[in-house]
Amino acid sequence: MDSRRPPLVPACPTLPEYVRHWAETTPDRRAFTFVEHPAQHSRGVHRTLTWRRLDVRVRALAARLADETDPGDRVALLCPQGTEYVTAFLAALAAGLVAVPLYTPGLPGHADRLAGVLADARPSVVVTTSRTRDEVRDFLGTGGPRIVVADEVPDDEGRGREPVAPDAGATAYLQYTSGSTRAPAGVEISHGNVVANARQALSAYGLHTRPMTSVGWLPLYHDMGLVLSVAAPVARGALSVLMDPAAFLHEPVRWLRLLAAHPDAVSAAPNFAYDYCVATVTADQKEGLRLDKVTALINGSEPVRPGTADRFHAAFADQGLAPGTHCPSYGLAEATVFVCAARPGEPLSRFALDRDALAAGKALPARPDDPRAVLLAGCGTPAGQRVRIADPVSRALLSEGEVGEIWVQGPNVGRGYWNRDSQEVFGAEFADAAAGPGRWLRTGDLGTVLEGQLVVTGRLKDLIIVDGRNHYPQDVEATAQEAHDAVRRDRLAAFATPGGAGGECAVVVAEHARTALLAELDVAAVARAVRGAVSARHGLRLADVVLVPPGTVPRTSSGKVSRALTRARYLEGAYGGRARAGAAG
Image 1 (cartoon, rainbow, N blue to C red):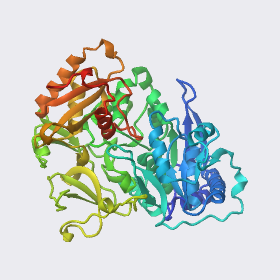
Image 2 (cartoon, rainbow, N blue to C red):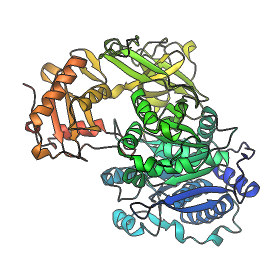
Image 3 (cartoon, rainbow, N blue to C red):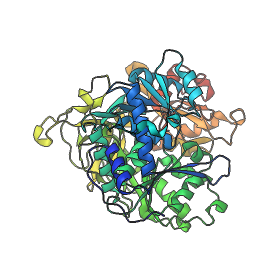
Image 4 (cartoon, rainbow, N blue to C red):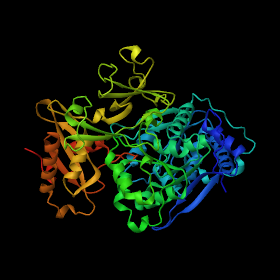
């Protein structure tokens, strides 16, 4: 039985030192539980590591890795979701090596990205499990890095070996960006960065002084999954309950059941996951489900839509879910992950903004029922760091209500990009040093500050600029997916392409709903509906609307639609030409 009284938390400089502390002070408390779902309607098979057992496995694997490498070598993690992944990550850090959190070659649609990241990181060792060893070996081919099978390393390998004490300023791991707007880059996250960000997250959500259980299905190679499901629980000495992302996608109620089963649960998911639960969890599945003990549900989408939170809480209000559990948040890999967060228990901050003014760089209020209003949620206040809004060209500090680039400064900001010039991103300075001395991280995200809260409006590189007017692609996508039932929600991309006279034009590539067959759809009617809605709401003429089968629009490793890759494939003609849905003119 676990005591619900939270243990006293020391100030350790690295995650492996936290593991050793909890193994010595609370050895029999549960540390990590992986819930496997071997069958379609399985309620889950639980596999648990106590802090003592975790420490034994980390020591053993760290010893093996130290024997196979030189200090500072990269160690790629090609493990499936589970306790072996956690052990491998912490073991690499404990051995004074640089972990590279990745995924197995079998992840659909990401083999090219995996090969590119491995070529960039140049690991000397790859860690996997006996279950995935063969596919990893086949993927790496001959002459590749050595393979260590985590679950085949015996416990006694770590006996008699003194643990390494890594420097807090040394690189702990490379967190590769998702690649939503550019080729993936490895952010160097130091031991001090990840410990600082874990503490920031715990403090932001009020988890540093109260019991908590992290419940997560986000992949551990993703920045939010790694920090919320591994780093924060390790720094807190709290239980982390993991499940496979595929298990969530196959049956979303599994996630909700784990939330219900663990008091003081905190979890995170993007917008689509909350809407997916609303659409797929049945009345029978809700029967007996109680969500009144959930502490916080983090939404880290960019931007966070208030409607998503409203639909989710309306769908599960009868299950006791409190409205104040939804916590819009903002972060990015370059800042380890967490930057700003709304606090649990507080009502959702809603902002209705004038679309035209927003496109011109001003956040002016509008009536919420105005069809031309943009509805956004506030992402709270900084979590132990400084956030400013800067003019991306002049580098001038902007005042509240002005839209610009979000700049961040804090102990969680990474060291830079691995193997490439990082000064432009990680070494920004304001034109007037008095506005914010020191070096700042340029996030590439657009936002503003309203009523003391950060409001994220979009990505700088994703802006669609047509006839001198700015359009946010996520707004265009939201309008397009509401225009016709045949357009699949959250599986479409709006982007700019070269137009005549050196200008740009706008294009939408959208998957059709799984319930529809492309051959039976009136594609021209769908295109007309999308064009009409976008024109009426945004004053934007779409040059092309392309309807494609489910699974065709590429996504990043974190599950977001990759507008950059969709645009590249469109320009390459990968979507079968414009005739599929018809080009304007």
